[in-house]
Image (tube, rainbow, N blue to C red; front, top):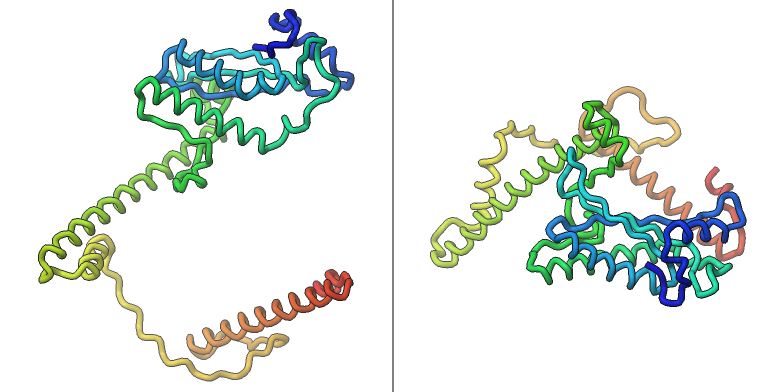
Length: 299
C-alpha cells in the first residue's frame, strides 16, 4: 500500500525496498520499521484484510509511508488462534519524485507508537462489534486496566520451536510460572467474589429483617470460617521509659525487655527522620542562596 502521490514502481515490493536502501547514505541507517499486530481469530480472512486495510491507510499511508502487509496464519503445531500480520513500513515519506531526504522524527516518538496501539484497539473493537462479536481488546497494560495479573513474555519462533521439541527454555519456564501465579490469583478473586455476593445477600436480608445478625458480625464470621484459629499473643506490657538512645554508641547486647526494644526502635526512627528533615532544609536553603552543597551535605 502506497500514498496516492507515490510513483507506480512503489507498488512492486522489490523495487520499493531497493529504492529505500538506495535512499540511505549511512551503513547503520534504518531502512524500515516493522509493526506486528495480532488479528482477531473470530473474523474471516477477508474481514481481517478489510480491518488491516483501514488501519494501515489511516495510520501509516496518510503520513506518507509505504507499507507492505503480510498476513501469517497459525502454525499447525501451535495455537490455532495465533493469526497475525507483519506491517513493514518505510522510514521516509514517499512522494511522486521518490523518497524525501528528511526523516520525520515524530515517527520515532513513543507517543506516536502509543497512538498507533490505541487506534489499532479501536479498529479491532469496531470490527468485532460490526460482525456481532462481544469480545473487546484494550491497548493499555494490565496494570493500567486495574487487572492484577502478570503478563507473559512473547517467546518468538526460535524459542517456540525449542519448546515444541521438548526443550525447556528460560522464557518458557518464566511463562509457566506466571501462568501458575495467575491461576492462583484467579482462584483468590473467585473466593473474594463469593464472599462479596454472600455479604450483599446478607445485607438484603438484614434490610428486610432488622432482627438478623448485623453485617459486621456476619463479615467477621465469614472471615473466621476461612482462617485457622491461631493462639492469641500475650498482652503487650506497658511501655517503660528507658535511657536516651545514643546514636554514636548503641547499647550492647539484647534489650532488657520487648518494650525497651520497641522504644529504642522508635527513637532510632525519630532520629533518622529528624536528620532527613534537617538535610532537606539545608538543601532548600542552599538552592535559595544559589549554592550547590549536595556532595557536602551527603558527607
